[in-house]
Image (cartoon, rainbow, N blue to C red; front, side, top):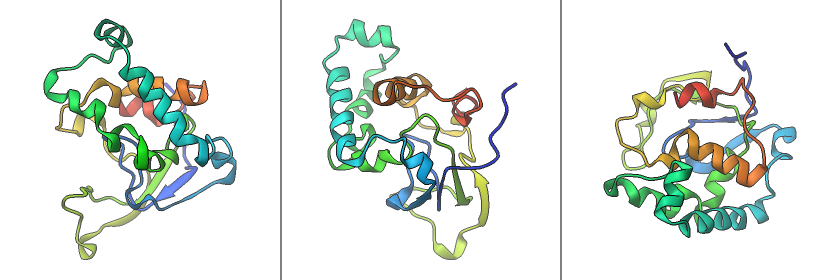
Length: 173
């Protein structure tokens, strides 16, 4: 059994773990010691682009060996710029990109860009994020958006993996 973290290094209104780790609205408060571990913002977009360019150039057998083969019906996810964090979307991935990330949020409501909650219906209450588990997500996801993909990105961007106490292991299992 792993020691569970009891504090966060990035606090936001709502943390979304799926399809990628993000703070809707890209507004957050973060510890300086955490931010100093991140790839600098001016280098992050290029690092994400290079990582994804490398993955997209892989053959099907190579992707399969990495655990990134998928059904054709969801392969679009692996190429969607907003989901893979390239181009103008890179910075939406930045604050949550380090293996030591532990978010917390203050709203327990689900969030959808297509149907944001009415501000009168928001339930407030601080909690470590994420509040849900991957098994609660009803949408099928490309393997890149699961634990294997997160580990791949952490290794490529930071040459690190999360500590054993990280929430990520419980979330994705």
